[in-house]
Image (cartoon, rainbow, N blue to C red):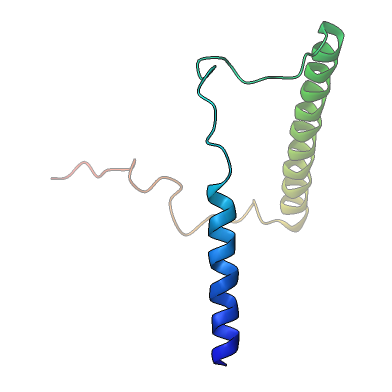
Amino acid sequence: MVALLSLLQLFLAFAVATARNDPPPSSERAWAPPNLPNYTYPEIVSAQRNLASARSVSHDTQSAIFTAATALALSTGDLARPSSRPLRPLAVRSLER
């Protein structure tokens, strides 16, 4: 057990010693913006079109889910029954004070 701990300590000491040999980050061009990929105009337009299409599909899917849920509620008569709780309990105030 002692040999294992001393081996671990030696390994950690070696790791710290080699880590200190790395040069510090250069501050020569700290003001410069990071290197970004150069996209062409058609690539940007295509990416925007794909994003708009994905958002449209997302809205269409959400609309279809709500429509199916409403159709199910109507077919089972769930929307025809009155609710026991008010829809907006804080908005309804009594006239008596």
